[in-house]
Amino acid sequence: MATGPRRTRRWTVAVGMVAIALVAGAAGGIVGIQLTESESGSNETVTVIGSDPANVGERPDTSTAGVASMVLPSVVSIAAADGNGSGFIISDDGYILTNHHVVAAGAGIDGGAIGVELFDGREFDADVVGSSPSYDLAVVRIDADELQPVVLGESASVAVGDPVIAIGSPLGLDSTVTSGIVSALDRPVTAGERSEQSYINALQTDAAINPGNSGGPLVDSGGRVVGVNSAIATLGFGGDIGSIGLGFAIPIDQARRTAEQIISSGEAVYPIIGALLENGHQGPGARVASDDDEQPGITPGGPADEAGVRSGDVITEINGDRVRGPGELIVMLRSYEPGDEITLTVDRDGDVMEIAVTLGANVG
Image (cartoon, rainbow, N blue to C red; front, side, top):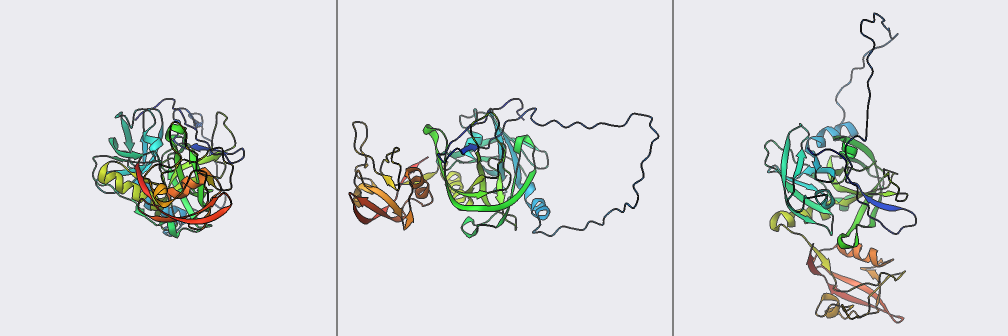
């Protein structure tokens, strides 16, 4: 497995002073533990009065310990050239789901080595089946026997306050388990550099997530995976990042769709309306950009064009859900599938109207 110093990429979201950071981890020399033995030849003894070994029985399946024992054999550690992270087995023929930014660290996407270590200590080289930077998801595959896949749940059934458990390899410490609750649903998270941004309609959790947890599962009290841990909020851009109780996971309903697309075709698609948005618009809503010399605001022949959306329109709602800004509009759109029909509420120079748009598709 790769060792040595690793870099941690930072992804930002404009929410006050809070920053969103990817949680692919740095490895090598982060945690040191020293155990000191007593001097050899010592005859000293210590008697603990009233000690009585507890009779520990089996934990209930729904306890944190019970859930961990069920899921841990399905969770893996992943090492790429310049980073490490986590993943989980989704099929007994070797498919593993993780984050795009985990396998993209260093040479992974370009054909470099990806190392996978299983819960039982076996190590394998993995092939990248495909990746989606738009959803920050990737699928890798190993040639191994006796694999135990996870059970996928339904993120649509998750409620605020539900107990959840995050499992992964934070700071290179494999098989780490943390617990908490679902803190919020449909939290719009825009992360990444301009050339490769992800838009996540995320589950928010206070379960501790740290660098290296990326790609690991967020599971419910029944051991079913409800999300893919992907990012955390930080209080600025100092050299150190870590959990402050604000973690974000990609809902498993979206992750399942994307994984199925990658496995079947090697690539994933995401929905589009065929319109550019003004990044400088402060809201409320998202304003469709005007035409310029390089690119039109509305793609000719695209979904928005055919539906009658115009440059300068301000999109204030999608299917009745309020849009607060351009980033949130994209996040909301990504929760749908190409071919879905949505209704946009549009403010056009003070006139409010509803426009039905059938979403198109793009690869990425």
